[in-house]
Image (cartoon, rainbow, N blue to C red; front, top):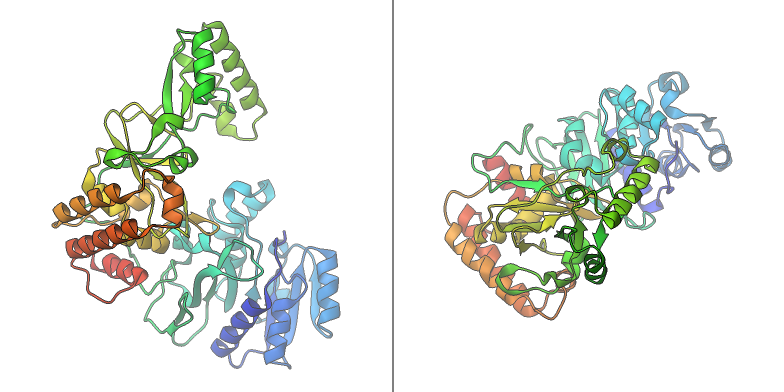
Amino acid sequence: MRTDWFTPPQLARQLAEMTLAAAPRAQAFLDPACGDGTLLAAIRGQRPDARLHGIDIDPDAAKSAAIRLPGAHIVCGDALGADWQAIAPGAVVVANPPFRGAARQNASEKAAVRACTGSGGLDLAAAFAAKTGDAPAAMIVPAGLVRGSQAAFWADRISFAVRPQAWPGFLDVSVAIAATGFPGPKTLVWEDGHATHPESIDGHLLPLPPGCPRKPARCGPPARYGNQTGCGGHWLFTPAQHGEFSAAEPQARFTRFADADTMLAANPAAGGHVDGSRFRWLLLAWETPGLPHVAERIQAAAAHRAQSASPRARARGPRGMGCAFTPSGPWLAVPAVSSENRPWMPVAFMDPGVRPSGKVVAVVDAGWDAFGLLSSTLLRSWLLAFGGGLENRIGFGPSIWASFPWPAHGLGPVAAAGQAVAQARDPHVPLGEQYLRPHPALAKAHAALDAAVAGAYSLPGGMDGLEAACWLAGRE
């Protein structure tokens, strides 16, 4: 098990500085995923007499670390199967462990995560963090491990931390520093580099008491993920392909299918919608399986599923879908993942009968008040604080939406401001593009929306986005 990137020197120096400040008398340090020894070298650079220990599964990396760090005790082996106390008794752990989300783990990695943490669904880095036990440990971790449901892994054990951010040398991966087991005051370093000393730091690396955010007293209209077709593309048709297939098989049944990419590539339309003329069509293969051309598509989808590595896909059978959810009324489409470079989440109304894809979250029975809140800076800050994500992208889903408190009053101005945002969208520029580079009229409309949202929640003035999200979580 090894990480995909070695530790950037700047990040290694910051972790070493914070670790040595928190453990001024420590003399022994262990890096269980030492790579070429960058972290241990940063420790030695600031504490030359420290005893250094390292483990790495890659023989070349372990050899490089031993050459780089004369006198260090470097072991080549699988760290998660090793006895760390036997290798480095009483050592402070510093590490940049391998990052691997649950979906990308092989069977042995999944087993290691479950053995070390007691549960599944966590990033592989959590296994390294759990193996430290109560010993002082400072680790570089992926942003996903301090966001969404994975943040609960840390409970209230954080001693010091650096909030998730991009670092040179980590490509597009946003990482954080999380430390546990150190005595003394807590330290939290924010994205802009300033440090605070809160009484507690929660698993999201925010200054919140345990148990925040709590279940809100009021929440918005329900949301759910869209449809996972698992058809290998055999039931999905472009508008041109739909016309050709319908001409050859006029009794075949279709419905419009809204996926996130097509939605973001579409131009805004009236009433908060987008132009759906380029949406793909989904063949309702299971409704007319006896038609010859439909039967061919069913067989092709079945062959794809039989070869799939996903047990869920194989279990659906030749005709089934992951779900067959079609909203009966107008609904709001929200991308399940959006770029952090967008200052607001791009959302749009969809007509009844349009089916959402698995990468779209459908907020049903939604009006302009929900449109306004989903489009606000406060909602985006809530997602950054408490939601999940992928790399540097923002995740949105039914559970994080259900956790977002709904204001008791002031929804009328929010709804009106939401309509103004929709009217300010340029109908000649794709939705996703203009939310990456907002034009002045759209930015002005969003500023007015944010003012209406702040009024609905009675937000104190002078707060940035994360401060507002923390205030809202603590208030609820």
